Image (cartoon, rainbow, N blue to C red):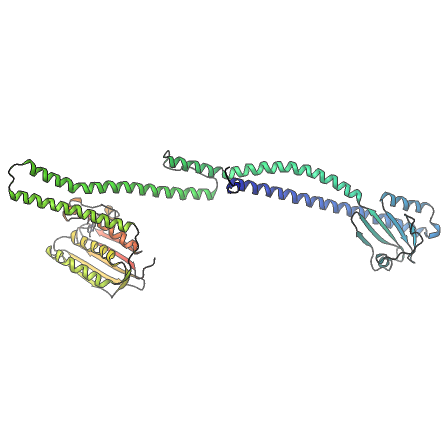
Length: 469
Ligand code: ADP
């Protein structure tokens, strides 16, 4: 255990359990000793009271007076005081001490408030405790409760103190024994508790070293099981990200290589022939320029995608969405017209939204360009705009080739194309929809696609009117 032990969960758990056990043991010990002590004192006092009242009865029966202080009863009182290691006083109704086992006050008058109270019947008895003595005052009364004196017995509690001392020394031995048990129990429990954490940690290390590709660890505790589940989810996510990163790199290489390969083929075929006519040079050079344009487009799209991926801050401003879409359509319409494709814009209301104009224009122009690119000659493209109090909605609908169901989830992936040849023909890089989706997600919006092969495709976009960071 390096450094501060309180930073070790195991140590803190051990200490907590140990202290908890010790607290219970000490509390139990204190309570036991206290109640034992009280019981002993109560019993002794009850015994003293009992003996005193027996003596009192005998005093009554024998009409005990100062003058008749000899005899059996007198000896009995002395013996009792002796046994109790205390003192007994017998006081008559005139508050005269007719018997003092210490003899010093015998014949004197007593001035003691508690004795007055018992004599007058204000109290049926008085018990008071000092450090190691107890004092009992009880009346000497007949069956009709007529008081003819009081007895005052003070008794030593030292014997109880001694017994208590013995019992507590025995208890201390037990405490020591229990402390060992508490220590062992705390040690075992804290070890059991952190065992699964240690196991998890060693598995994570193995994973980090590359010896494992999954955790394969289970815990008996719910919290740890949840942690393991969350970790597994995170791991799967990381593995997916890594796989997609590798796939992306290999896709990028492949895509960038294709135009270069074509250019090399074109250049080689020119070099291999002698006396190549000028028209052929021109034709091949034109093809090579096309390939360079294509390479350029891929690189530009990749850079755009990277910018969107970086979660760069949006440059949000109030933008008239109607004007934005109309401008895009104005640009696309001439291209569509070449293939006799009609592009219609329908706006249900004027919409002004807080958006990044450049990024959103790119997103919508990709959708509209696709609707033209993947359309049949003479087809239709219908773009509509609507809004409620929270969002605006853009729908781009075409009656073109459509997207097969099994490709619909993948068209938003980078470099994915349903028909590679057609896409290449139309100059597609396979990055358009990935860029579109990222731009929409940056606006906290959503995009959905509905398509029927041979019938057409509809993309619906929903974007919040107010940008929330
Ligand atoms: P590309 O540059 O190839 O157009 P995109 O990411 O824009 O790449 O689109 C991915 C693929 O989705 C396209 O290759 C095409 O097969 C399909 N696609 C996109 N839009 C449409 C559409 N409106 N109609 C039919 N297919 C479409």
